[in-house]
Length: 315
Image (cartoon, rainbow, N blue to C red; front, side, top):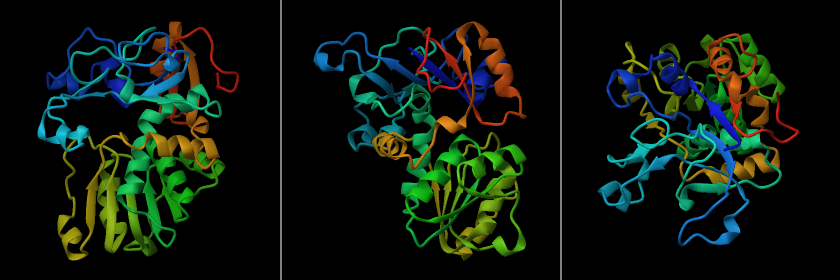
């Protein structure tokens, strides 16, 4: 493995606060890590030798292939699935070597940095959200949260020709959005009520989840991309009904990696700009401290597993 991305799920495992631990879905010890990029060094039976030496990343769902959902192609919903580094017994990607089914891998073109490759796993879900909302160039779209998911989603919306605004109370997050050429504001204003054809809630923040219902227009669509850690009190379901709003829950970006690679390769989506710092493996404790620091200028923290990265990667 060359490079590992860290997210809030990993931080919960590191500091012991994870709901996976609390609910008995995961137990120590285990190898964490589910956002990664590496090079194929060996192939198994039935996999062509042309894979050797390729730079790849990959999704982390390991499914049964037999249930109703798997047979229908809905592998995200497999009740027997495991997710490396997160759910189930399989070790995560925070190691020098991992094994992965060939059909879970995505080849990275030369135009993509290692950093961008490591960010494909979380940000592909943003492309899924935009696709589920069927965003068109005539839409007004609000994205709530200027973190990794929100900024990837907003850039995707822009690439599809729609007008987009990013809402986030954090000045550093709004500054990064502006650097990416996105329009931002700190909070909704009165004129924003019912103003948006589509809303992407990308933070999981309870107040933002409630705001999404306020912002969406009659007949509009909401994608719940962020994951709240608790039940959201005061969620106005009645307004969803009265306005005839469609609400989508968005899980994972499986099936959207190819589209995301194309967007990054074309320059429409900049993932490298989302990385605050890359730590060497022997400073992994410091990496988690930095991840927990809410004063970061950029959302992503990564750990270098291999001795070196591409020259374009931030350090």
